[in-house]
Amino acid sequence: MDTARLTVPRPLGRLGQAALVAALFWLTLFNLYQIHAAFPRKLVESDFRIWYAAASIGTHLGWSHLYDLAAQKAAVEAVWSGSRFLAYGDPPVAAWIVWPLTLVPFGAALVIWSVLSLAVLVAFSQAFAPADCLGRVIYALSALGFLPTFVMVEAAPLSPIVFAAIGACALLLIRGKNLAAGAVLSLIMVKLNLALLVPPALLVAGYLRSVAAFVGSSALLGLAQLAAVGVQGTRSMIAIDMGFFADPYHLTYSLEVLFGSRTAWLIAAAVISVLTLAAAYLTRSRGPHGPIAAGIAGSLLINHHLTPADFIMLLLSIWLVLSLRPRVEIVVAGAALWTAGWATSLGLAWPVAVMEAVFIGAVATISRNVPQAVE
Image (cartoon, rainbow, N blue to C red; front, side, top):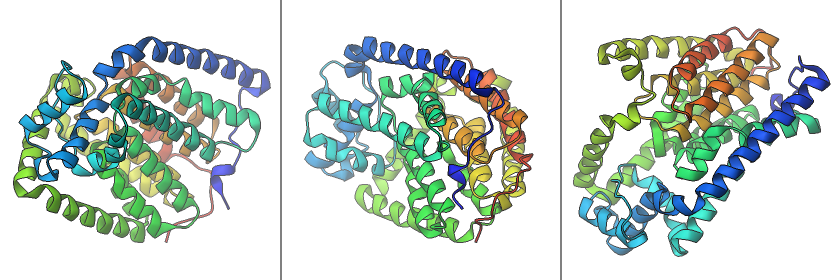
C-alpha cells in the first residue's frame, strides 16, 4: 500500500482550503517578485559561484588542489571578477555533482541549477501529495510560497541535493526498495549536518539493511574522495570547515547562541537526539515517515551551521507526517512548523527552534496505524 497517496485530513473544509490556496498563491507571487528583483545581484553574490569555481579546479588543476586556497581564490576570480571570496569546504562529491555544469558558462549554469532546485521541491511535493487536484495544488504552493525557497534560489546552496536524497530514500522505503534507499541516502554526505540524525532514526526504527547500505555506500564514497584529494587535501578541508564552525553568521540558528552557552547547547543536543530517536522508535511500525520526519527536524534543531535556505528540509518533514493522515492537532503542529520555518528567512531563530521541538513530540504521538514497511 502506497501511504504517500493517502488523502490528508481536511479540518478546514473546502472554504478553508480555498483560503489556504489563496494565501499560498500570494506568498508564491511574493517569492517570484523577490527572485526577479534579486536576480541581477545574485549573479555575483550566489554561493553557486563557489561550487562552480571548485568544480573547475578539478578540470584545470586536478582534484588534489581542491582545497588549495590560492587555487580557490583564482578560480572564483575567474568565474566572476571582483566578487567576494568564500572558501570551499564541502566534500569533493559536492564539486563532482556540480562539475557537469562547468561545461556551460556560469550564468547559464546558475539558471540550470536554480531551475533544477525548484523542480526538486515541486516534484517531491507532488510525490507526497494527496491524489486530489486541490491537495496537489496546496502541496506545490507550500513549497513555492515558502520563504526559504526564495533564499534557496537566491543563494543557490547545496541543500536541494540533501533534500532530494532524503525524499528519494523515503519513497524507495515506502515501496520496499530498502537497499536502494540506503544507497541513495549516502548523498546526504554532501552536507551531512542537515540530516545527521536521519540514519540513526532509521536504524532504531528497524531499517537495518537500509542503514547498512547507507554505511557501505558512504564508505565507498569517502574512499573515492580520499583518493581524489589525498590526505593533505582532507586535512585542508577539515581546517576550512573548522573556520566555518565558528563563523557567527552560520551560528544564527544554533542553540549555542540561543542558549548563550556551548555547554547548554551540547546538553540540549544530546537530549534532543535521544528524543528524536525515541520518536523514530515509537513510529517504527508506521513506515519510514515518522522516523525520517523526526530525523530531519532533530538534525536542524541540534545544528551548529545553518543558513535560511537549509530550512527547505522542513517541507519534507511536514509532507511525510501529513501523508500518515494524522490527527488534527498534529496537522496544526505541521502548519505551525511551516510558519516558523517561513520566518527563519527574516532572521527569527527561536520560533523555528521551539516548533521543531514541538513537532518531534507530535510525531511521537501519531496514533494511526499504517502497514509496516520495516525489514
